[in-house]
Length: 120
Image 1 (cartoon, rainbow, N blue to C red):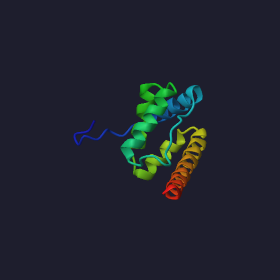
Image 2 (cartoon, rainbow, N blue to C red; image 1 turned 180 degrees about the vertical axis):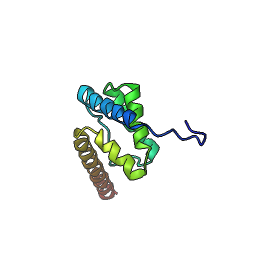
Image 3 (cartoon, rainbow, N blue to C red; image 1 turned 180 degrees about the horizontal axis):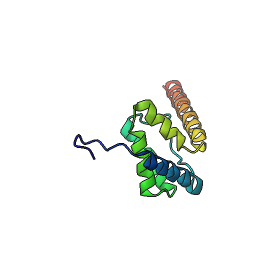
Image 4 (spheres, rainbow, N blue to C red; image 1 turned 45 degrees about the vertical axis):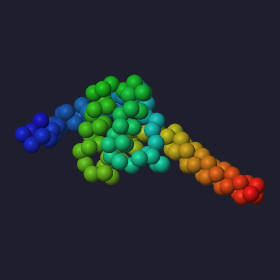
């Protein structure tokens, strides 16, 4: 850690080792299942969901930390790009189903209101 509280930049060799660790983790354990759409978009919330999903898949703490450090090494768009790079494509189906479920819940609530008005 530098005197300014920021971690020193990795050497090219460390960067290659980190890439290898991530590739190995994806190959051995798969990508994480987590939602981005329809959830809290706060960066800390996203970091938590990504870390938890990768841990559930069996990623080592070191591999999870490499991903989190990479996510926080740039701006918000960079954070999202890294998150998507370790996101299981099936997560998109989960997001679509969650969105559809919200729409159905809204329709159900509207129907309940209409029935209550008719009963009055």
